[in-house]
Amino acid sequence: MYRQAQLLDLNGINTRYQARLNARGIFTPLDFFAASLPLLKQQVFRSINGYYWYLRLRGYEIDAVDFGRKSFGNTYALQHQTNDPRELAKLLMKLCEKTGRRPRHANYSAHGVHVAMVFTDLSWWHIGRKFDVPVYTTRDIYIKALRLLNSSGYPKKVRNLAVSVYDLISSTDEQLELFAAPLHKVSEAMDEINDKYGEFVITPALMMDMRDIVVAGQIRTDR
Image (cartoon, rainbow, N blue to C red; front, side, top):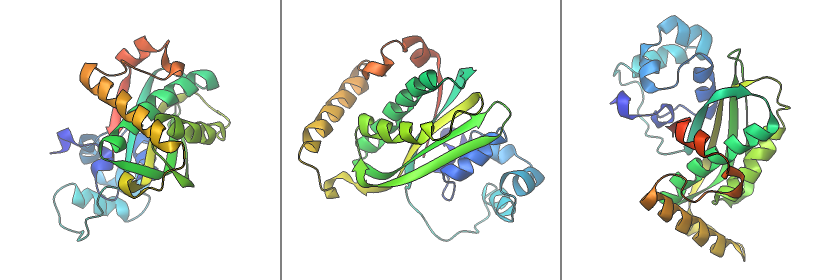
């Protein structure tokens, strides 16, 4: 079961907890399962939650609530670790494209955008914001995510970069602005082409010189 899942597929693991787990070298549910109780309790969660998660992962029924889907996200493990704003902006666009396709396929928009970084010294930084107007297109997600990323000040070289969207609403319930509907249709058409012919056949202009990175990069898809 854990082999096919991602960290954010686990009910109760949000992007903040994901950043903590990543900082301790835990990137998949299998990594999570293999982690020791002292590591989870004392270093990751720093509370009784570490013990609860140790039990949950071993099949103990300590929860009675199904929280449902809360977010979509992707994490990128940088092959060339850097804090260059220009390089990170391009990688961020790649993550926003991957992240945006998934809620669009599921017919969701999102009010919240979250960006997280794990640095080479295993410290981390993250920030999330909710917006009045929901995001749907890659462009909308990227504009919000880049604004959040720029607030970090790029203090250290980055090992992992993550983007997620949350506070989901059904796109059918969304009140569209005057020019939003055509942009929605363009995004959906691009998604259909990439689904049919392969990843990143059509890409935003910022990704035009990133084919080697796109092919070789390691992207983790999260919930």
